[in-house]
Image (cartoon, rainbow, N blue to C red):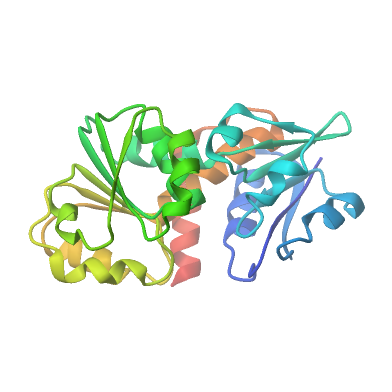
Length: 265
C-alpha cells in the first residue's frame, strides 16, 4: 500500500493530494496521500520518524534531500535536486520527475524541433528544464540575477549555456521557446519588451492564472503552455514510481487537469 505525502513549506496550497488521490482511484491502487508542512532543515528529522513510504518534495526540500537519501538517481544528481523519495528495502531512494515533467508537457503540446531556448531563472526548476532541453535543442541562453548558480546549471546541461544579464529583455522575442522559471512576479520585468514573440512560452507558474507574462504573451498571438502541465506530468511519473506500474498517461492527465482546474476555480 502507498502511504504518501507531499512535504514542503508553505504546503497548504498544494494540489498534489487531489492529483494523487485521483490517480490511485483511477489505477485501482490502494493508497493514501496528504500534505505535511516541513520547513527547511527539518527533512532529516521527519524521515527518521515517519511511517510514510512515498514522498513528494517541493520547495525548500528538493536540494536538502540529496544529502539524506540512501540512493540518488543519475537525473537527481545531474540537476542537484530531487522531488521524489520512495522507500525500497529499507532505504530511501531519491529521484526527480521534474525533467520528465518538462519533456511530456512540451511534447504533448506539440512543442518540438527547438533550435533556440531561453530560460529565465537558474533555480531547481530551471535546472530540470535545461536537463531536458539541452538534449533536444541547439542553443540555450539563460537570463539570471544570481551568477552563483551558473555552476549547477552547467552541470545539468548537455551543451554550453550562454548566460545573459537580466537587462537583455529583448531576447524573449527571438527564441523558439522561453521558459519562465522565476518565482512570483519577477518576470513582470520583461513585460514591456514583448513584441510579437517568435516562440512558445512555458510559464511554470499556474496559480493565480494567467500570470501577467502569460497574458501578455497570449495577447500577442503566441502560444503559452501553463505550469499546470508540469505539475500534472511530474505527478504522473511519481505515481508510476510509487505504484511500480505504468499508467495510461493521457487518460490520467485529462482527469487530473479537469479536477485541478475545477479546484482552482
